[in-house]
Amino acid sequence: MPETIKSMENLLSMLDSLMREPAPFWNKFYCNRTKGVPFFADKPDENLVSFVEAGVLQGGRMLELGCGPGRNAIYAALHGFDVDAVDLSEEAITWAKERAVEKNATVNFTLGSVFDLSPQSEYDLVYDAGCLHHLWPHRRIGYIEMIHHALKDGGYFGLTCFAPGFTEMGGAMEISDWDVYRDRSMHGGQAYSKEKLNEILGGYFEVVEIRMMKECTDNDPVFGVPFLWTSLWRKHSKG
Ligand SMILES: C[S@@+](CC[C@H](N)C(=O)[O-])C[C@H]1O[C@@H](n2cnc3c(N)ncnc32)[C@H](O)[C@@H]1O
Image 1 (cartoon, rainbow, N blue to C red):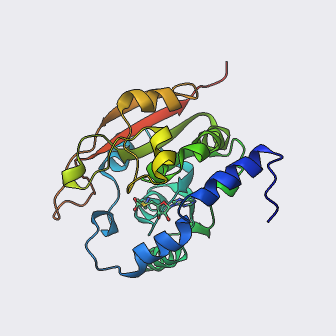
Image 2 (cartoon, rainbow, N blue to C red; image 1 turned 45 degrees about the vertical axis):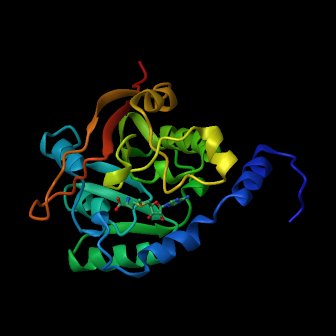
Image 3 (cartoon, rainbow, N blue to C red; image 1 turned 60 degrees about the horizontal axis):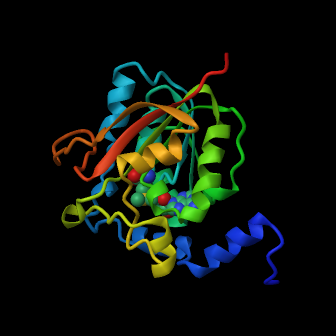
């Protein structure tokens, strides 16, 4: 590959090349389905369910980014949404498709990177459960702009991501964007303070809710761990 930086895309690719390649990592991560990772349980996020049950999210078209084995996409498809769901791990997409068949749910699961998407005002809901906090900071600007373009005016963006201060419980450290490059690592994911979430998303969306996820037990029908933010944002309506 020529190593001349002539465009922003060249610059992003150069920075990608300094970091761990994500697809092999995630494929290995999903290889053993029985290893007890909390979000391997086939249950939707408690916050997603609460907004559907409250009638705030009322169906329409949904795009799930970094859908993994499909637990939220499948729930949404069974509750009135027409769902497109994307993940770069072949292992995850294969698992998600198997689950959808078992549950008789129709979801358009696609293998690919979220960086290759360019939807335009198509979706009522974009959902990200734990993808953003694994994305390199240099890719975040384009990612958030893509989500903003993907949504219809007044559409919602649901996000769960690591909150700072819970590393002993399975959470992640809050490290600065610059430290990610000094260390060439996000050390398992980047925690976001509430202020940083507002800083990166506030120019695009208004906040509907930001709160800590409710902790759920194995017996609960929904998923919840105490070290994540859950948040819902709304794209400004025109006029
Ligand atoms: C912590 S997992 C969450 C999976 C799923 N959302 C869930 O909560 O069950 C993060 C997911 O993001 C996916 N991912 C990371 N970078 C991605 C990218 N550039 N494009 C698409 N998916 C990506 C990974 O493959 C992984 O499945």
